[in-house]
Length: 249
Image (cartoon, rainbow, N blue to C red; front, top):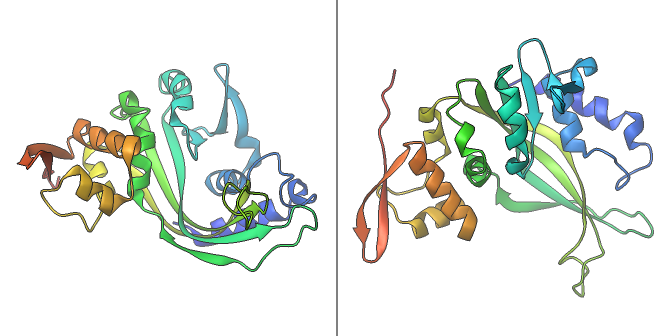
């Protein structure tokens, strides 16, 4: 982790012409632009056409795609890119988030308020399930970046205070707190919540991870597929899952 380089990437984006028109007018979201400049400071490596697809970053060593959601959109690219080059998928997680409200008419920005939630590595599991067929490819690396950020929203929601259903404008990175790389199946053990009992039910996993419904189901299916957990019995009508041990070498 290079916090100085990350700060330089923030300064490059914030001071660039792309931000001159203010919040809400950006063609490219700030978090995406900052990560591009952090992962590849040489902008000649940005937005390169490779085998009929545009990649966020192409270097002599690898292709890097930055994806904040919708990993299913990567499947066609991965089927092509992995045949030609190692590929890294960079996924930002909001570690600590401050929320700022913007009056759409006046442009006035409220004092920021800290969110009580802290981002966790486990959040990536539902997205990884969408590319599960590629995760064992030796050329693929998943790169998690834990970022402190400010999230800006317009005060234009449907509720009385205009906050519920409000339009999300942008997320501005302000610091890098950690990084994690997933390369082999044993690395996926790191995605299990620290406060998770062993064995555990899906309800207990949901409480520890914050995942629910379809996202919860996808996360458990992926952990089973990667050999991180296994079904070991039942607790009443609920299935019990246990962590599998991985060799140290």
